[in-house]
Image (cartoon, rainbow, N blue to C red; front, side, top):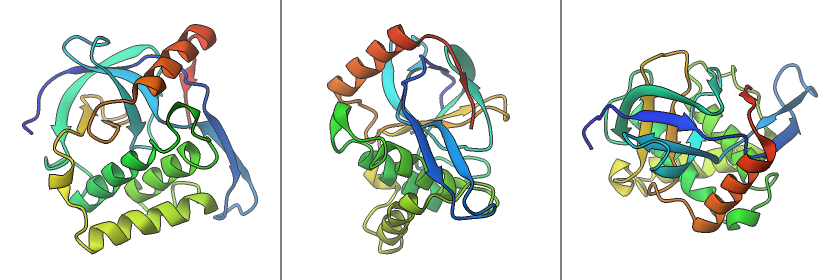
Length: 201
């Protein structure tokens, strides 16, 4: 998929806050924050082209209800600071966000999978808090990649947004880039009820 120059924007806080006790230093400290998937738009008609997104940069930032210019890429495209293994494993994990659909348990799926993705994508291992519940997902994704069960070719429609401002987080569409209808309805309902907030780790 050739890189394009779309606009990306998060639509609003989905209300999926997740808290866990970290395994890495400082051991026993609580970590809390919003986890994906997040509602957003990608493309020249943003927010008309709505998707569910997951974040692949823990150490950066983004703001709800704000649009950013950048490049739209595919899993096969070279992305600065990210390896093919990282991108394929993250795309693999994005597919796992979907079990349970709109009623999926944040503590079984969204939270651990978000932190598994962030740990896999960590440019310097140790910067992302270690979530014990994320470790089985990390092992599963790495085993799938190392066994060649999944490659970039398995995710031809997954789109990755790389912002022009490198302090802003990269985001990728869920699975094949098409959100489950029930999930998107839940997202939009949450946006109307919750309003504007700051997306921080």
